[in-house]
Length: 174
Image 1 (spheres, helix red, strand yellow):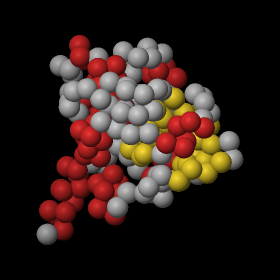
Image 2: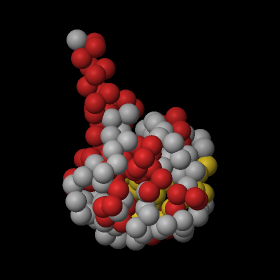
Image 3: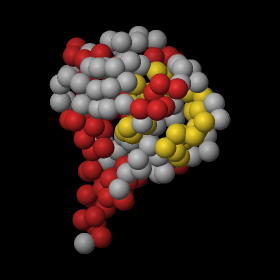
Image 4: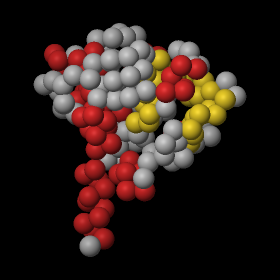
């Protein structure tokens, strides 16, 4: 998949597929260490989830959603893992909880990450999901789940595509 923006416009009103994983998903299975010499999203994306789910990249479609249990993104603090997820076309991740550094790295690159334990226990791999990322609303099997929406500042970072483009826009306005 090519690198793609994960702005709210990708998901709003669109039905996508859930890729469901368990708890304690480590960055080493999201993007195995042998790919750390790669840097561009175009190079990292094709190896996303390779250490856990080798068929993931063949199944994923632009706008799909990863849902996982607790402590998603545990392990190393490298940004490679969330970059690979975003580059694979994933529009957002919903999990029970995240490793703190993964959560911040995801925000910094413009990948929305939501906490919503109720949805994690209510869905199955392959279920269809509709989402309103800006509002943190997700609908699966007719049930609406509300995650806490991002504060305006964080939503601005996500809408800009990450912290670097967000700061660049701010500097141009100054």
